Length: 172
Image (tube, rainbow, N blue to C red):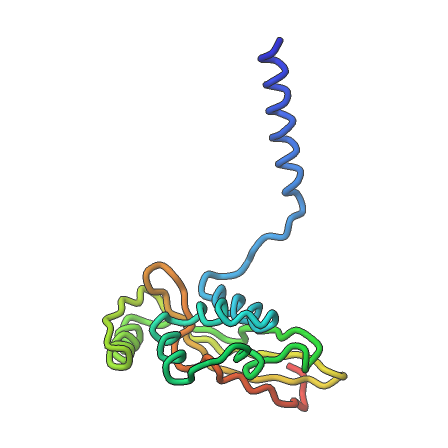
């Protein structure tokens, strides 16, 4: 009798769990897009620590040493309160990096940071950061490079504070 109740309870739990996931939105983000998604979310919530974690650790250290970001440095990059809305990031074009391009990036990173890297994959992407404020489209188009190092995807290069939203005449 007790075994029957346990089996029925287990079956009910399995059924409830399977029904709970019905209709759930599937995550269709590609792996190399995850640091971009995280960066946009971090910008929206002024989360400097999470934002900096989207970049190679060596670039994060370089930025911290050279730029000496203070508390609240995220407001200089993007101040959501000033715009009154969230920023969106959208990849408009992308291309996988080949072996030679990855080796060139590894060499460039080695010269810049003094550390040897093993980038297992790379992706070049045209990214549009945008928001609409008072019916005006503000945007910034960036050419970003994503690299996978140690099984983790990062945004590559000195682009931590390169965001400059400007008014656009055409909506893309």
